[in-house]
Length: 203
Image 1 (cartoon, one colour):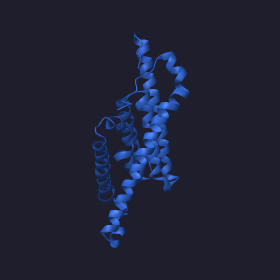
Image 2 (cartoon, helix red, strand yellow):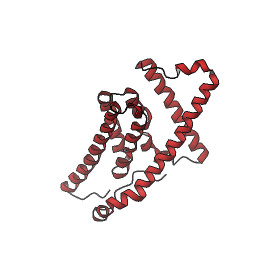
Image 3 (cartoon, rainbow, N blue to C red):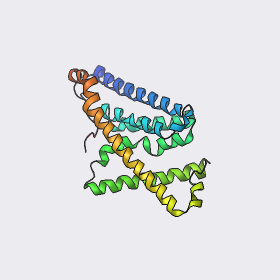
Image 4 (cartoon, helix red, strand yellow):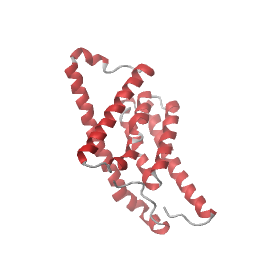
């Protein structure tokens, strides 16, 4: 981002960061609160909220995006009716879009894929243990154990397939934002004030 010399320019820059972060946090919390209205979307809504972090990461920086993530995570614990949704945002969907530029730097591709799946599965195991044993949420996998371990393997494989689709979709959303939405709606502003730093947009 171009910093204008002098106190006035710095204040404008800080105001811009605070404004973007504040708007995104408000939208995320609004979405998370809607899990109480639409309980069937308790997985989809954290994904939508996490996708909003792409805006902060590209318009400001990854550091500010993580700050927004921590703010939303803390407040969602108290404001979100569905604790499964809030913990899904906290444990994975809230910060994964911010990590994507860093994950893209991992070479070769096969190693990047392994790291992504290891991260997802490790976090999901910790999340499941946390909501069932710490928070006392209903053990939804318990009923499947009577069907045998192979059925559980099938569930595990299905969850990983869902992650593949999620990773592809969130990457496409980021590309759409950078390649179309940003130039279309912010193009004139960028020409006037200078193109801000794309925080690790490309790996």
